[in-house]
Amino acid sequence: MKEALLHGLAIALPFLKAFFVVMFSMNVAVILTWVDRRQGAMIQDRVGPDRAVIWLPQRVAQALALLPALGVACAAVGLAFYDKMQRADSGVGVDAGKAVVASELAVFVTWFTGIIIAGAVKSRGAQNSFDRFVASLGDPRRLFYGGMIAHVAILAIVALTSGQSDVINAVLHGGGVAVLAAAIVGGAVYAVLGMTEPRVGLRLIGLLHPAADGLKTAFKEDIVPPGVDRFMHGLAPFISFFPALVVLAVVPFADTLCTGTTDGWADLSKVLSEVPRAGLCTDGAVRFQVINLNVGILYFFAVSGTGIVGAALGGWASNNKYSLLGGLRAASQMVSYEVTLGLTLIGAIMIYGTLRVDDMVRWQGQNAWGVFVQPLAFFLFFAAAVAESKRIPFDIPEGESEVVAGYFTEYAGMKFAMFFFAEYIAVVSSSAVMAAIFFGGWNMPFIFRDGIDVTIGGQTFFQQALPHGLVILLGFLSFVGKVLMLCWLQLTIRWTLPRFRYDQLMKLGWRLLLPASLINILVTGLVILVIDDLSYTAMQGLKLAADLSNAAVALGGLIAGAAFIRFVLQPAQHRRVLSSTSAQFAAGGTRRFPMGA
Image (cartoon, rainbow, N blue to C red; front, top):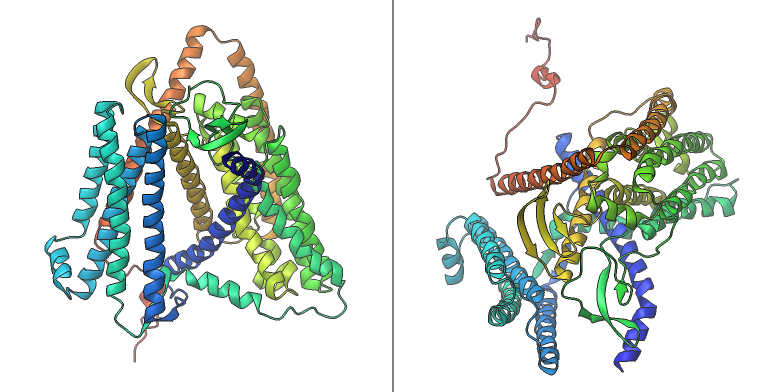
């Protein structure tokens, strides 16, 4: 039975990975639409969109809050019990990695749930004895500080015992699962008891608004103007949408997961506890990548380049002069910046010595991140990627003040949504490629496949072995975090820079970015020739520089994390800021001659 399940899982695994990549890119794109609106409202000092709300009967809302929590808690307890039975049959102790994950997750869910409850009590006041107890704890930030102390204490206990104490591992694993289940169920029960109104509004911090927009778009009429090429008019949105979605197939989200095998099939229940730093596992290897191509980065350019056809075809097939102008603008802009997009990566390919994206990520883990070895290439690639997505300040193809809506002026309903949504998916795809090629992918400074090793210039400051599963999880979270940060940076640029004129756009692409990318290739080639002739001492100096770059990233990450936590924990202060001098003369007149009545 188990062999049949493993055989079926091995067959379904590529489809599951493809499904995950599609869902990841589309859901992040949906969240980006929400962030884009909120950030634009904050920067422009205007009222953001109303939060969509779903009104549910009391019993239905209570069931939706309680039943999923009970399911998750039962699943956690069931998996822990199954793991215990498996260990009893094999006669092995609790894995240190599972103990750390269970206990840390339990602590996180506990203090996070506590903060939500404390914030609700502080805003509405204590309504019962439990609320009064929560209010007696004082500032909700104390729960966060206590949670951080508990996180560090668990890591310290595991580090001091080197993960070899079966008793401590068993206590952390069993206690962690119990606390996790109790925190999940307890938070759900508190939410259920607080639902006293006949109807309960479901808002999800405003994320229902993009969902409502999508639902409305699905039911809007698909208007096709007369005189168009109906086949080409309907085909263009698909050509624009799917290339932006499938380019993520070659991007690895994490390092290869090494597992045991059963009858030649990878057995996910037998994840190896530790793996060596060098080499790759062959048997039982699970890649977090949809397709592993030898020409992975060329696949990215080949597929993403077809999006040009969709925009040009949509503008031509619409039988509208504004659409035609927008399609011509889109084609010329995307072709121009596609050239720069490809040439900027030539230097990185010369240094990495491979076209495989996963090998590029491993090179950065062994040396330094790509942004340090190819800084100019990153900035050129970033600018070209923003231009490829046709977003402000590069939104010439759809400039409302010039060509109405550009190449999709004559589109409505889901066809318009595919054009619109393709831009946000392109933001996610380009961010994922930049994170993999320039920011180390899943790599974190001084965290290797066998654990933490803080070594700078041959001097080791700290070493700690980590379970293989925990390293893979940290790498996955690191990659997702980098992608989200780059997406947010692109959204920030949208609300920061004004739109270019068409001649400025072409001049930037052909007279600045393209020559700079060619110069970058020339300089990279010269540097490689010089490095090949360096002495052993000079090579050691380069290795020290790479270690220092990792140290700078680690230190900067710690400082940024602390600053972000401090910013989140600071009490909100509402202050009115005048963004321009025009607000000073709202009453009329000028500074020299004020208006008089």
